[in-house]
Image (tube, rainbow, N blue to C red; front, top):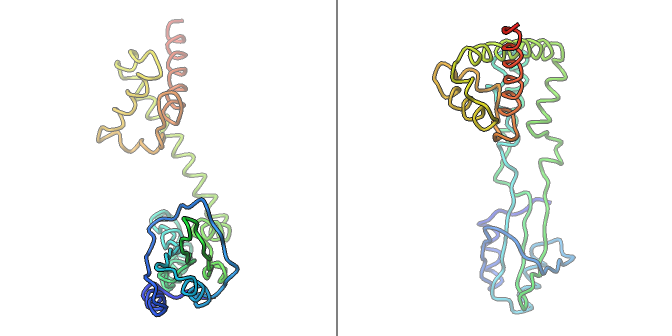
Length: 233
């Protein structure tokens, strides 16, 4: 069942000599849900019980949840990008102003009495959110995805080794005797313009007792101490 939009709904409510009030957020504990599935039937109920106000609350699908970020796939083939583009073009033809649900209610002695009308129109069309659509496209181009993924792993390992070599050769690193100091050290290091390319290796940072920076620097410190031991022999 499609749900009428805001302007039409307000006119409909006013026709019943009731004042429409839109709700910006909905959090009510005491609720009674009526077994009514038509807006007109609920408005008749509200009118018959001499309600002065009808409150209403819409939910919508979020366009951003369905659009695949095309810049994630700059290194992929033209055929792959075409599939991403086709998905996004189709999503942009949809009317995201169409409500997903409408809650109508009145307050009787402080108790919510209302109905929830649902129209899962995107779900009914079998349209995938971006995460699911990406998985479908990547499955279709499995070999290409695996090759690029393997190359990224190799590049990431090379970047990790490069970053650690820079850290090992920095005299300041020797002074970082605990996790908090090593955490601060790496954060400051990666803020330098020529070091920002390594930032992705430890995103998201976390904090000094847990997270990617902590894990990276724990390993780095152990490798550093091992290197020192070997040099002393």
